[in-house]
Amino acid sequence: MKKSIFAMLVLLALLATTMTACADAPGTDDPVTDPAETTDPAADQAESTEKPTIFVVGDSTVNKDSDPSFYYPCVGYGAALENYVADGVKVVNLGLSGSSSKSYKMKEEYYEFLGGIKEGDYLIISFGHNDEKSEDSDRFTDASKSYTEHGSFGYYLNKYYIERAREKGATPILCTPIVRASANDDYTESCGHITATGDYRQAILDLAEACDVPVVDMTSITRARYEELGFEKACLYHGVQNAKYAEDGVTVLFTGIDTTHLNIYGANYMAYRLSSELKNIEGIGKCIADNLTEPTEDLLVPGEESVILPVG
Image 1: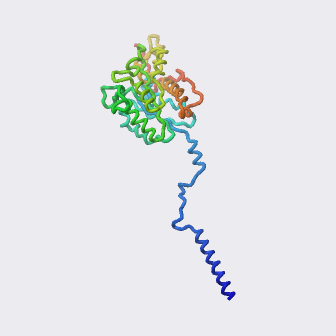
Image 2: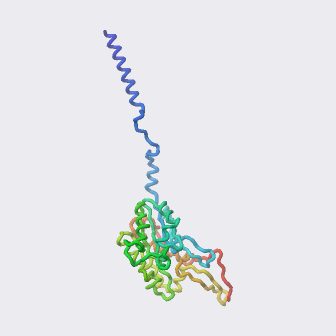
Image 3: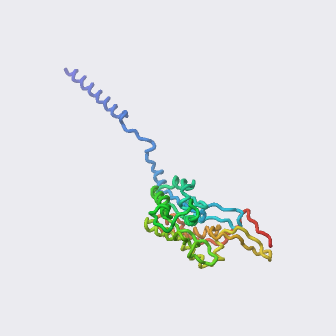
């Protein structure tokens, strides 16, 4: 009898051991950890410290292209912005010559912005110069109408740039257009972006208030600066197509001054002024360099393919 009981106890012990072993082995219904879901503390820390990217969209006043045949080639201030940001902050300048807020959305650069911008990034929006061209239906937008009306300047800025940036978790920032240098220092009309189809600066300011978007009034900044300097000195910020020697054979005279487009000195000055304003805006202010230095005329260098014409 005792032997039978002992045998039964041994058998039960063996069964218990087998069941424990089976319970420890992974079965088909047990959750399996995906290596891709494994937490990597180093990767998480890198992601949390990654600097945001500043995207720039707009027309030729911000674009990156230049013509080396110009004595002082034209370049947009978006191309100079990288000189005024903090270490590690990337600037993606997608400015495109000839574009308006309406026509830009059909260009490759627009889709590059949509595909590249992400949560935490910033979008600087600078249109207006070509939106004013009422004779061009592909580019014209009406600044006299509310942003809620289809076809208005504000409508395109809001629908295709502000809303798209916010959908991606990015922060849009509006810029009013820089003025065109006026030979008679009059910035109350087209040189100040006030036309028969509206005040393009004011339309941007109204949109910024209505949609709670940060705005930098580059129109007022450049107007005040140009009025202070006067036309002749203000032209030092602008592209120059040709140059020739004066009768003395030494003095260089400029011809073909582009009163809309900036040169490298002007681009850096405008980027410097923009950055000074951005420093005061929550969020993007941390992306701007601590010590901003106003650029000097030393930046002016003739284009690689430019020539100075002889006297005559």
